[in-house]
Image (cartoon, rainbow, N blue to C red; front, top):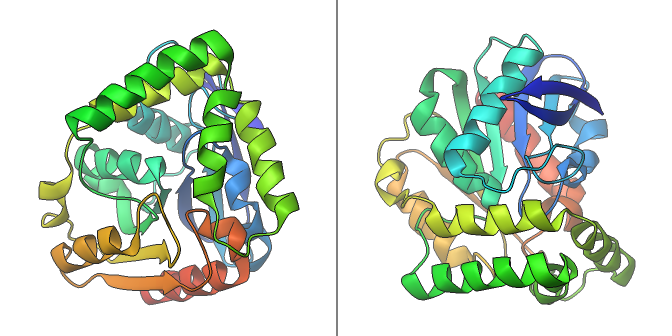
Length: 261
């Protein structure tokens, strides 16, 4: 991992390969390790840019965050590595929320869009309230609170137990301050439903067939609203498609990258 000071914060990121740039944005409360299975199949023809969002992985922690700040951090990473070409932006789960914000604010930096196991709508008042309550609990009891609550919902039925437990450990080790900040940021995030009709770049939507957090119905709704988009449902996968079905995910993404030029 490399680090740079971006927006007065230490940002950790990894860059692998050469070719057209692909910017990967992980979900909550994960890290760029989510994308490691993509390195071998995709890096020979693409430059894979994999940052840790603020408060997660190896990046610095702030007590507050927002989709706007996450998006600005991504733009800062591109500046730090000297990447001036438009990127294919791949956002998974919360990373999808960040991707919508990035698209709105930095349209010129986006060549194509990949929305993975995510949704466009914002939280209901009840869901937002629940996130805020969880944030307080995390600050009192640690990130294990979120790890234990989320792990049963993240994976498909056939996911190997070692894989499940490894990600439980990664989530548990994430900074409680960073986790709490992300929870509030998600509770406050804007509704991106109206953004869907404005997306004017090649767009791929991927969802796990068994995703219980952002189910296929959400993906189909986005697909119907984004003109010319492509939808792929990965059989046997839950919410964590890049690590549950890495070969299938890399094949689908690789084909899209070629088609998007």
